[in-house]
Every structure is written in structure tokens, then in C-alpha cells.
Image (cartoon, rainbow, N blue to C red; front, side, top):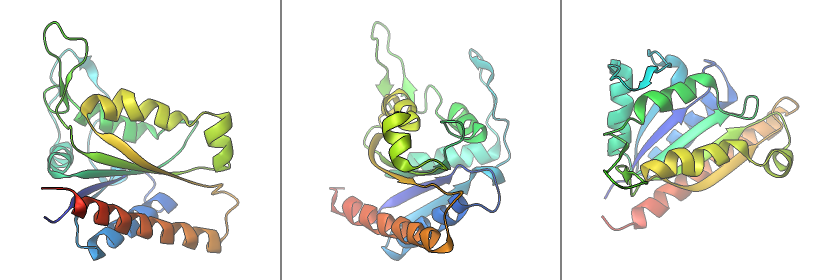
Length: 201
């Protein structure tokens, strides 16, 4: 069975390290034999705000419909993003708000506190860039992106976060460091494809 992966580049900047990392991960996964869909959040046309919360249905733009379809078909989700002010860029957060909808990602059942996880069985990898040292992000700040995404977002939908990579500090990095990080992204992709290929169909 050919693994199917969705890669989300959450950095809205058109020319960024995250953009390069996402491309390199996708290239490594394709070389490993996977089908890969790559979406750059900065290139998607959508309104990131939920104007009525989840009280009223807000029609999905075609680009968000495409992201939903890609996620529904994927076995593995890869989010590549910078850590800005201890969290994800606002546009990526808006993408998650708009696409991980009731009836698609989860469904509450009468009398039950926990929803049905409609995306169960999928796995995820986080590949985060940051200007702080990774040890500072993990141990001093407490890995705030994972604290928010792991159980409250991905876990609620049934997606299991299996791997995380922290790359930084970016603002003082040289070309050798960036090339090393790109190599690591490609290696992570090949590792994920091998793991997914061993899973029973």
C-alpha cells in the first residue's frame, strides 16, 4: 500500500526556511515512494476567522475544501511552522479553526463528554523552527505549541502526534546549519514513509 501524506507549510512568508523544509520533506517522501500533497498556507485563499464560532456554518472556500480532502485521504500529517510568540502563526491557526470542523474531524455524542474522533488512525509530525535555542523552548517555555496541538487539537480529532523536531536558533544560523536541517527533514520523510509502509492496510 502506497503511503499518503499531507504536508502543511504554516509559514505565510513566500520565501522562508519553513517553505524550503516543507519542500525537502515532500521530496524525500516522494523519493521513498509516498504520495504527497503539499499546501503552503500563504498560498491558500481563505478567511481565517470563524465569524460565528461554530454556532453557524461558514461555507468553506475551495482551497479549504482541498485541504480537508487531502487530510481525509492522508495517513500522516506533517506540519512545518515557525514558532512566533510561543505559538503558531495566526493564519495557520485559522486554517485549523476552519478545517477541523464538527462532523469532519470530530462529533459530539449525546450524554458523552468526549467526542467521537473522526480522524482516528492518522499520525502527525511537527517540524518547528524557532529563534530561541530548542532547549529553551522545550524546558523553559514548556513546548507551548505541542501543549496546545497534541491533545487539545490533534488528539481530540484522533490524530496521534508521533514525532517532533525543533530547529533553531534560526536568526543566528549559517548556511551549513540550514543545509543540515534540510537534510534532517528529508531523512525524517524517508523514516516516516518506511514506518507507514510497514503498517497493515
